[in-house]
Image (cartoon, rainbow, N blue to C red; front, side):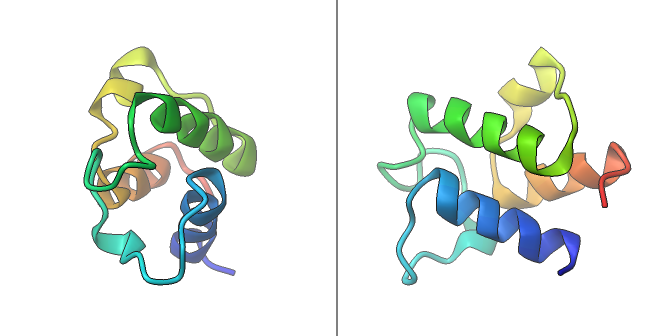
Length: 78
């Protein structure tokens, strides 16, 4: 499974998303599930799944699926 698919699965599980959600185009606060509490759960799930640690600034800047994917690539996640 590639990085993007793993991240997609992490988003779906962490935010308890339905199949109808376009995860790849999702942005922070686009949906009720991705509020401030959901954001922290998502960050923790991504860190666990990819064995990375985000800096505070990265957590604040994580505003979309695409930004999250780019951050993981920058951290060398596989």
